[in-house]
Length: 405
Image (cartoon, rainbow, N blue to C red; front, side, top):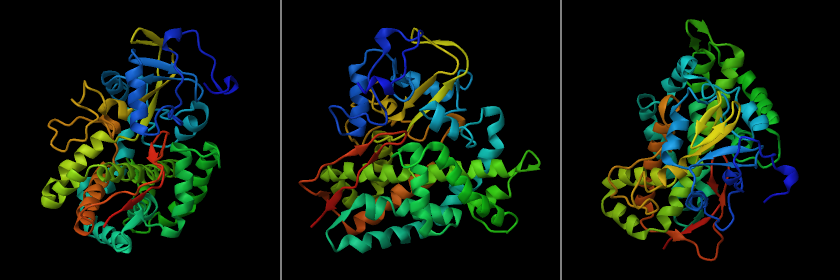
């Protein structure tokens, strides 16, 4: 266990047999694989609910039923704070909307995102996404190798998002660094500093977009109406910040995990080449097998869960990987099976806080596979490299090399 000076004191309401040594930001002990680390915790833990002293101390939901409850029961599990540690990243992110809002107030803010992110709004952009995807792959296809994370995963979804918000690609490194401080902090700035950095960047942008008649997401937010009134400056900044964190992180990591998985399954590659029509099924199974998000919720009032008393203000983390990778949810859960029937996952969350960017993410994943296999029909992980993953609110992969003949 970590130095006890960095660990939370075990509260009186936590039974001794529920205390475990697990840090979601560094979950790797026996495993360097993000998903196997979460599955290993579940397999080694007989209870559905445990408590860890890491990251200020919080509960962990480890059964599909309990994880679904945490996401779906807003009467007990509040989304006011969705990250740990609670006093730093959690409280800073609690200003971001609509994720931090209860069902009774979030809808008009969520609609501003839906207007630009749901399928009807996203579908017309597919030709541009496809063209950019092809351009990126063509840049390294003849080299017979690439650093997939750096040369593609950190390029396509981020550039597409920058077009969606109509911001210069040259600002990407700065904005990605800020967004990552919430999901995969590296210590370069505190969450409070990251929140202020977003505000400093977005305030002049939103001021300039207001009433400009432009069609991008940030203009739509700046001109937003909330129950018949104009959105306030603070609301616009917080809503835009939420969009930035979501748009600059999750799909990058999904793609990194997805191509690593496919590189290990040449038989699936061959089937895609022979029958590209199976790509949507492949994407669905990739999303089931490789969830990346571990959201938290705040306990609203004292409640009993799995025989434990959770106190008002306690935090509970619900890892989407544990939901998908459990025999109660999906038979033969660790197998990557593109013929799987009845796929069950919460990769994009569930209920009123389901990720509004899921339609863009699915489209980008599908286009990636369609364009990649037109050009590179078979590929593998380059030998003699260490494959390393990253823990956090959003798990990810370190850069790695793919190669092909």
